[in-house]
Each structure stands twice: as structure tokens, then as C-alpha cells.
Length: 79
Image (tube, rainbow, N blue to C red; front, side):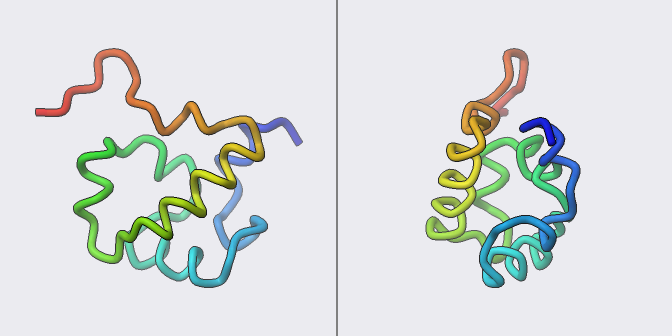
């Protein structure tokens, strides 16, 4: 599987903790793609967000060579 293909796999099918999966579902995320398209400013305001959840996400994306996806894309607005 190509690294970017991981983005469309349902979160519970990935090698992430049960807590991460549960929290992601509570925040309305079904895939990692759902997460990386949210602005960081919006992400931290989501009910259920925690920095430990973000840490697990960051570590997972880093391990897969996809950590750069958490950076805002050119043209994304923080307004």
C-alpha cells in the first residue's frame, strides 16, 4: 500500500490505539484524510481534541512519511 493510500483507510483498521480511534469517531473523523483537511485552528477546537491524540496522530503520520500533511496548504486561510 502506498503511503497516501493510508489516508482513505477507515481509522479503526489502522495500527492506532483504541483511544485514538474512539476519540477520532467522537470528533467525526472516519479516515486520516478527514483529519488532514481540517485547519489546525479548527482541529484544536473540536470537542474531544487533546494533545495526546495529536501526538499519536503526528507520530503515526511521521512513521508513514506523511507528517507534512498536517501543515497548512498554500491558500488555506486561518481567518
